[in-house]
Length: 577
Image (cartoon, rainbow, N blue to C red; front, side):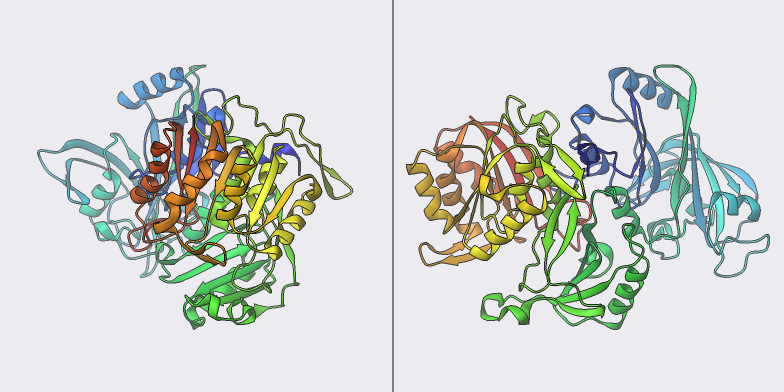
């Protein structure tokens, strides 16, 4: 893999130039974060992903459950021009929707006033003006615009869908949904407005046309809807370039309609996790996923299932590890790729299989040296991808960094953070209580063309070694803290995140250089984000160390946050003086 692939455009990006970023938003993803500690919207994710997108501006919005074309401004000129065009209704917006209701009109305009009423919007004389033109598409046009097996003919029968084109002439929230529902053809899946239950709201922003802010020429950006694809899978497909990443969460519990069930794709394999054995519907889902893999491989070799238990320490490794559920057994060790980095995985090492996928975006931050908009990993901006990745006879070769920086990865497990930092040119120190995990980490270094002997691996209790390193005067540019929620060692007894995180941060601070970065993370699900951050920041105030920069990073979008499936992962990056 070349260095360029790390910076390749995400699949959801349709077009980019100096002034514009056009994206195809999948259904199920907010335009922007609904609250400070909720999951990122597509805007937040993009804005914090690349330095050149740091000034990205929202110019219009799509509902969470609506897919389709969006435009973001990259320059003041683009922001001014497009804001003015949206204001005077010079931007032409075309949507496609499906309904399972009959219509007796072919083409018509609905003009009303709408106002908010709780979670819904309704027509009301005191509301804001809203006007939408609708056109029922015939069978031939529908087949051209929407490749779907049950596009209706001229005489629809029960179970068929009408494809309707909608052009909103105003830009009111839920405008198309309100007009469709109140005139007898609610959108399929839009249960808030009386639509028939379905896997998603079948509404897609198919086209945006406007004058380019720099040239003045009319430009048109289009996206065909893919109403046939499972929306859960479409969301994942929008996030990750398949040539760079083939490991992600496919089902995240109740957020994806399966309370208590979690499924990861790990290269050529699926890993299912739940508190109970697989049910027949779950087994059927895994079988279907194997034969229609998303979108990395045409067919997945096997599916494993792991029964989640709170008594891990009282159970032997073979009893808590994943067990083959479908297909052919995986080899003892296999490789997945994430942001172009190779990691060793195994279903034969007990409860954990080798990598925590929910830290993917944070590992990428180490790879790129870009934490968030305006927040580089080092104050001098020294962290660039100085480590060259080349393909030579199928192997990856790393050029040593001339301007290395020091990274301490406490609670390193299999050294995922360390590998990414080393690929970016860092000198890394990995600390963990398990020799087996550190050996696994050394193999991860080797799999990526890195010489593990050029880096430090320390076996022992983190609390003990943080004190030792401080006495030796060791200091680091970046310190990574990702402790387990609960752990136990002979030297320091029991560690509980909610109770002991302050002490952990206090021990770590003497190791962070002035202007250095502290990364703190926890997956304590019942610990509110505000309390976690208070526990991280209080020791800094006590030590009179000022926070210069701060970025809170929630779990990634393939671990979607919802009311029935609240956030569990909390991570924060802090630059301190």
